[in-house]
Image (cartoon, rainbow, N blue to C red; front, side, top):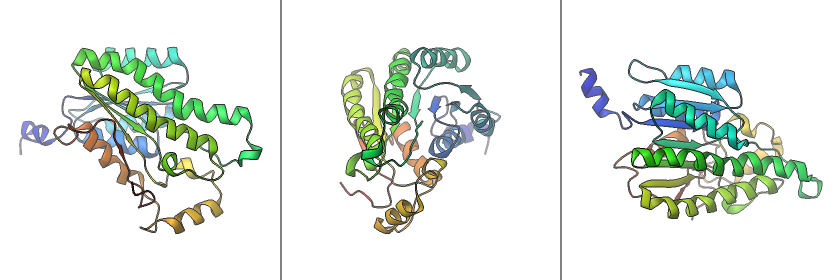
Length: 257
């Protein structure tokens, strides 16, 4: 097979993808898969060494990878990052919002500061990223936005009021964004994974994790590489062409809409 034939077989050749929270977990798995499918990938994360490592993994003979450290809750920092990506890689076709924080705090012990921190990273940051990436997508004639939510945003969860509120907000905001941006050929969807074995859930108690695993029809937590193909579906054509405003659920059967 020639290099040209190999590129034709890849689903994202010629696309530029921005993966926020791409320094680890689900975001990293998506970034690497997108690169394998031919996309140039910008990895944004507050942890610069992790972002750089993932960007290096993304690089190939026909694929560019770049890393930026950014505070996803800082509007001007996010705007500047998007502008820089356009300068370096030529545009933005795909945006993945995968940054997240999570801790287990009972409602009656939760402080306002704890609530605000989770809402800022898990919800406000999605708005900021879309706000500053979408105008660049318009310049390309369209794009794909994929917001990583959680099945807990659908069903709720104990000790996670702040996280559930944020992820439910992501699901609702995805629908509103989809309605507004469809006329610009920008398709906006969410992925609501079940519990996935990533650093994000390490702070949860063993009791919480054991109880959650016992609830799952499949009987196990997922892994990040099992979520990434859902993002590829939504980012690709023709596979993702009819999806907008949808929430797809690779969740081990935890939620069955």
